[in-house]
Image (cartoon, rainbow, N blue to C red; front, side):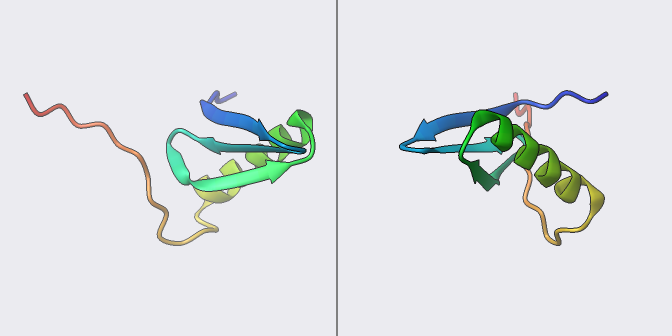
Amino acid sequence: MTTVRYVYWQDGEFWLGYFEEFPEYLTQALSLTELEENLRELYRDLTSGAIPCIRRLGHLQVA
């Protein structure tokens, strides 16, 4: 089982969230449980190659 970090918040009636590794790919739902389901589906799409030209967040040590 893989664990990934995500950012989420509630804005009015909607819950919004995205993965730290993929900050440009946002999803939303009406409940936190539904948001987590949407995030799981989004993660599968992002890591399966189903979405072309994915931008990722990287870390680089320069000094």
